[in-house]
Every structure is written in structure tokens, then in C-alpha cells.
Length: 350
Image (tube, rainbow, N blue to C red; front, top):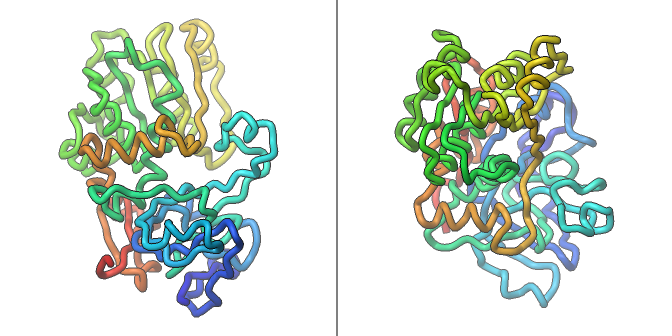
């Protein structure tokens, strides 16, 4: 089968490799759509995966073509999404079914072979069947959609009327979609490009601020009558963005830290004072909940997509064929090109 194999940092080869040999609890998934995550860029070009060679890619969906045991035969031909984190099922977090915080997890696309290939071996436990109304592109975006939902579910949204979202990339834009679907009255999006606001305007009610043209603190204070936001989602992971998130929150407000840091986070003393004096609550969030039950993030997301409450695929800005993955990676690396989600898809779906 064909696959993109990361042989060393920056050395991604598109070549024939042996198809996976299935274990009893695994299924062979034919990949139909695969999203390029922002984290794939440093993983491929800067830091590498946990070992070489590795097939990257953790956002994907497809069709079950083989199973490792007869007892899973009913899965053959099923259209599926894939939860990429493979929990150990033995640690303290797994015992309480908080699998996203597993202490000894495996992970498709970074610790074991992932979705930038024709076929992937996936534990049957990690598969979620797709309703006919959910297309492969939307299903390939289930992982970021669930990361966004998981961040929101860290807080009690019952009495929240206004929210600021700092960073309008894939996750931030999905958070905005979720907030709109939940009926939040005032959503303030803060990004770095006009195109981000244009994209979001077609998907959700949101007042957008380009922080390269307007001070985000002034914007939020203007929109909230000088009070600040009740809830702030920080989706960048930089010192500047985290500092802004704290500054935008009203007294007694909440900040959810979503963005992955690119380096050390050193907060200015005045920002730390704001956390104390405004009695802010800071929440961390990581990955998404997948418990195989209807109230986990993945089942909620699938139902929201099925009923049209959110449309992850509406954030796709570029599409490429499987053979043109390298071009998709280069587009995402080129900061002069506006991207939100770059999707790799087969020419036709079967």
C-alpha cells in the first residue's frame, strides 16, 4: 500500500510499505479523508515523531475493510471516525474512564502509524460508526471538533452570556461554532486576519476583531460596556495571547487555556496580579472524552453534525488529493496563505 513515511525530521517519503498485519482487536480502515493538523507541521519538519519510521496523521475517517477477528465481522464496510488516542486501560485515569488523560497512551500518527496512508490498523474500540448524514470530511474533523467541545465542557455554560475566543484557527473557530449552537448571546472572536472573520461569519453569529488592526482589550471592553468577558478561551498558546486572555476577563470570570505552547510561558507580574485580584478561574483542557457512551464528546459531536448544529467541513479552506499531501503541508507552512483546515481526500467515495 502507499503511505507517507516520516523517516527522519523533514524527510517524508511517499512510498509502498507493507499493509498492516491486524491483531485480534484491530480493524483495517481505508482512509477516505484526512485533515492536516497544525501540530503535524512541527512534528514532520521540526521535532519528529516518537520513533522513525512513522506514518503521521491523526485526523481521519474511512471505511472498515478487514477485521482481526470473526467477532468483529459486523464492522466490515462500516463508515467510521477514529479516536486517535489509544489508552492503556490500566492506569488510574483509565480506570475512572478519563481516557484522554491516560498516563501510558499510544497515539495514531505520532507514536504509531496514522492516517496519511491508504490503510491504517486501528483498535476496534477506537472506531465510531458514522450516520449516513455525516460525510467523510466532517468525520475527519471530528477530532478537532471534539477538542473544541471538550474545552467548552470544562465550564458550566448555564449562566454565561458573553464569551471571547482568542485565536481563530481551526480549534478557535470550532469553539465559536459550538458556542453559537448553544445559544450564547454574545461571541467575540479575536484573530489576526480579515479572512478568519469572513469564514466565521458564514458559520456562526460572531463579532470579529483583527488584533493586528485593533487592540483586543479595547475591543472586548467596548463590546461589554467596560466590564470584560465572562468567559475567555485562549487558543494560541503564546505568552502574549495568555496575557491578553487574562486581561480580557471580567472580575470573577473564567479563562480556559486551550492553545498548545510553542515554548516556555513566563507571565508578567501584573498579569499574575490580575488573576489574583480579579479572582479568575483558570481551566486546563486536553484532548477529548471518548467512552463509547452517548454523553461523550464524540457522540455529542456526531449528533450535532448530523443535525446541522455545527459544520466542521465549512472551515475547510484547501483540499488536495492523497497524492498531493506534500503540497497541502507546504500551504499550511506558508503563513502568507490563509488556511483554516487543509483536507486530504480520495477523488471519490465508495
